[in-house]
View 1 (cartoon, helix red, strand yellow):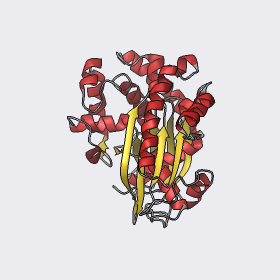
View 2: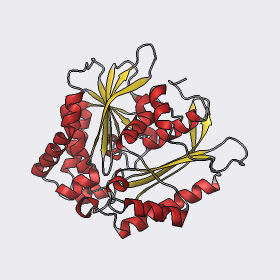
View 3: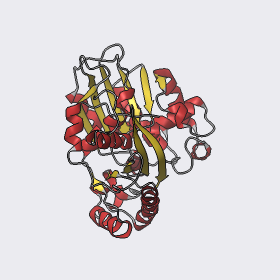
View 4: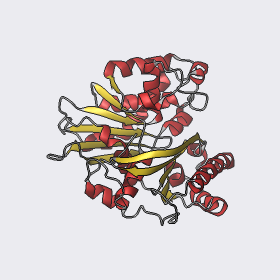
Length: 355
């Protein structure tokens, strides 16, 4: 599926100026391939794509739950076990980029590496052992890359949209406004990076068995973190087509549960619209499941069974502050935003909305 950036040209160029790595392989024949790697608190994800007339086409992908930030909220450090798991995943990513003769890549790391005492030591180790230079991006860049990656899914007739990306160690939220006379083009007018995600919240409150009282405590913690952003956008117009746009494993899981998928299928989830009542029902189903039932579910699995309810608490806090009749589900985000910006900087392809 073709993807494209939807930030304003000024925002794209401002973020992209410091983003570009030197070409990895200038000698490859055929269309140049680009790669985007997102190393988060919970996941390690890679996309390799080639430019196409309307954005880009994915030619290879990799995703693995590594839990790099496991225990970080208690110790302040990345554990050796988590580092070894992550190094194994990064080795797979390196080999894929080499095999594909990737021309240009951007490899980013987010909250776990930002906040860990030994984050710089870990990055140096990755460079020494694997030859990969990971770039720790700040929270503003992370939020804007998420918007660049999935903002095009916003209803083009909605004057404003709240975009959120629930991560493992941080969660990004932004207020996007439609630019007049620019079709579906969107501008991020306000943003906030919450220093909590599914891993940190589950480690603080527990994730295996979540009682109504624990769930309410999670929501209260998220609501407090949301308060500065809520104040910043207070009074802004919400038209009748106002909606939420969510990008994360939490919302894609909710979509899978709603659709009763035997196993997760991105093709039917990415871009799906859910009504308020449908989200209510799916969250209620998840909260009613035991840990064993969540682990056995094909859209959750044992690796995320202890995290999904923390994600639901973050989602419910956002929905309480920004009531909307609809939410659109995005199985895309940072990596797609990176690819769009790299290709735009090279004038490769013709991303929609920013030409």
